[in-house]
Image (cartoon, rainbow, N blue to C red):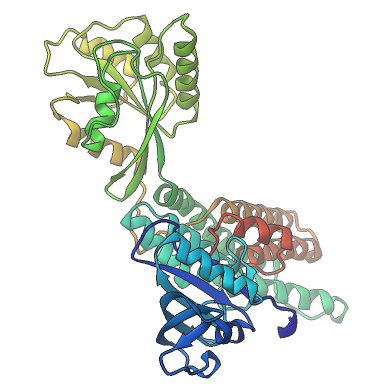
Length: 461
């Protein structure tokens, strides 16, 4: 792309509000010409003469009037985030100051950056590939240390390296097949079908390994939707408060206090657990409770994990039995709450109804048994998966979908091999698989898909 066709962009890159500092970021060919007009240093030097990767003290000025006292950071191409001429203006953090400086930049020829446009330019200019670019938003959205570490691994290029190795294997095999097709009439011996099958199986195995890790990556980055379910007044809100170590939900002895879902995120040994405290499920004719029950049942269907709370100080009733039966096919834990009160529930009957599910005894209000519950949740979430921050790759839904397509392409090629079909059909499947691998790192990808990916970024990143 010609330099004179590239717009110079700017945006506020820090959250709006009162803070110590606020940063306005600029990128593009006119960055320093624009700053020459609005930045005055102590020595009155031009910004265009400043050395790269240095911080300069001065003022932003509008027609001789000082707008703000700032620190200006210069990053000349190609050693910048976007590989373009860049600068960051460190202003005071007040909203008015930031808006005035941004207005000046726009008046002097800058264009307001769109969501993710700085990172998009970093990708388009070859500083990072698309998988690394997507890691940026995962870093910003990380909710736990483990999620942050895994996202940083992807930004460093760990996933890209895995995809690159797969591509190299696919390209090598495709080249061997195509050579044999080019010289089919020469009666020369090239790669045989058994060898093609062997190399295809190696590719298939690695793709499957990446897909197995996709679920772990999803758990670490997005967390687990965990619904607290139960009939009214069994202690669901008390359990939420116990998880949070604070009184987030209103707790009373009146059944039906919670009328809507309450959502919070807790960090459970590196897993973001999105806890949803739902309204008590029971038969009711009151309109507001009917809607609350409907939402609770909706979460029951959507949750990754169900915590079914049962009052141990009362005998099982029909509502309990319906919920126990309704969650039998779900990943769920039966929680006997209020164990600080006299036990009136039939434990043996509950074990039989539970169909092998874990039963945990707690008192949410007395903080009894919570550590045991958290350990069981952690074990159930991983379900035997081995996951550590130096192994896990964050594979988002886009990557996962493309890897599923690659797996299908390889399986189709293997089927063609097993049937003894012409190498031309095998090569066709392999080429499709290679195209799907290329899309993960951003090769041969459409502008429409790029715009969709970067639309999820914040403005200024």
